[in-house]
Every structure is written in C-alpha cells, then in structure tokens.
Length: 284
View 1 (cartoon, rainbow, N blue to C red):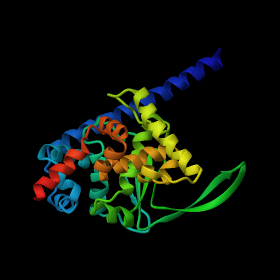
View 2 (cartoon, helix red, strand yellow):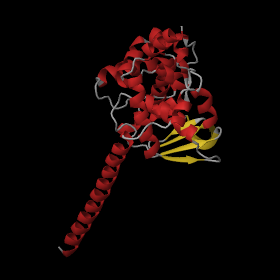
View 3 (cartoon, rainbow, N blue to C red):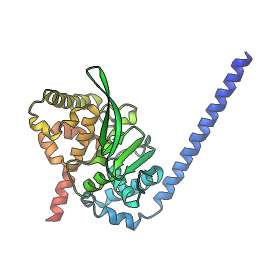
View 4 (cartoon, rainbow, N blue to C red):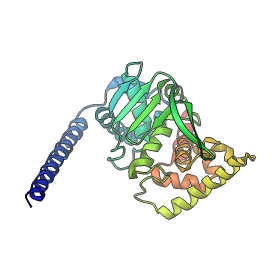
C-alpha cells in the first residue's frame, strides 16, 4: 500500500510538471503571436521576397497573411547551419515556401516541427535497405530530408529552385512530408479538416498505385512521367512530389490529372492555376 501510494504521488508530480511546462509553452506562444502581430515586416525580408517570382503572384491580402506566418515560423523554429552559418536570406526563402503551403491552413500547422538544418550542398547518409529480404547498407546523397519534427535542406538546391519556378522544389517537397506526418504517420494522407478521407484515398492512392505498377515493371510511363519514378517509391513520396507539381506546374497537373489537382486544391485551399494566370495577365 505504501509503495502504491508513493508511486501515485510520483506520477501526480510528473503530471503536474508536464502540465506546468506545457502551460508555460502555450503562454509564451500566445505572447509571441501578439508581439509579432504588432511589428512591421522587415524591409530586408521584403527585398528577398521580391526576388522570388512566386511572391509576385500573390495578392496583398495573402502577402500580409504570409508575412505574419513567416515571422512566427522564423521565430519559433530552431535554425542550425551545418558547415555554414544560417543567414536571414536562408530563413526568408525557406519560410516563404513553407508558409505559402499553409497560408490558408490552421495556424498550428508545423506544430511538430522543431528544427531546420541547413547544409551548403548535398549531404551523404548511411541507409539500411532491404532487397528481397537481403539487408544492405548503402550511402545516399540527399538534397533534403524530413523526419517528422526535423527538416534538412541543401541550400545550394533550395536557392537555385527558389528564385526560378521549376517542377522540382526541395523546400516544398520536404515540408509536404512534414504536413503528411502531422497525424503521426507518413502515409501520403495529411490531416484533412475540410475534406473526405475516402475521396482522398481513392483518388490519390489509385493514381499512386498505377504509377507504382508502371514504374516497377519499367513500363512507358506516359502521362505518369509528370510524377516520375521517385514518386512511385511510396505514398508519402507521391504526396510530396504531387505537392511540388501543384505549386510549380499546376496547369499541367490539372490537365493530366484533374482529380489529383482538385484534391490538392481542397487540401491547400489555394487555386494555384489562378495564381499563375493572374501573374501572366499582370506581366502583359
């Protein structure tokens, strides 16, 4: 009885400490949000953004929302440079694309993300892979990686893709993985607050499976070439690659896979085709 009573007291103390720490974190977060709402967006940040073509596609209301989310993102995340210093340009560029993806989503998006590591170039990791039951150790060269709470970015690739709209964007790719992992599982199905899971699963999974079969059998991919073989690895990579295309090649994605585009439009609550069309009309 004495032992069980002491154990109960210890558990209560641990619970009280946990609740205290969480309350302090929540209070600090609320105070940070209030402080950032009352400060102007730095001009040197704007100068970086004005060099990003995508930024010019946004209307003023969206820009204001994005500015605020970027300030919160930059302030709340830990930034660590590996073999280089993290500059304000790195923070602005990475946070721009990360926050563009959630500009119309819940403010708690990326709530599990704590740290962003920035490498100067690609980096090499050791991986254990299995082929037909045979496990081998291999080295992989990566441009980025997401592990559910930590994101690693190669600045060389991120910068090259940030200032030119291409079909590949390592920042969008890795932060799509973070959104995917917010429910605790990297399975290509993010938290769908305003959408049906059945519709998402049927459309996205069916498209992925078709791509996967073609890729495994080394068949001609046809229109599925838009996704590429890397998207065929698993559902998580398919979602990440699809997200890249949604933001960088929306018209082509909509023409070839209208149902996939519709699902991503519903999730991100952004019509990226309209953004591009508006940008073209403004440039004429």
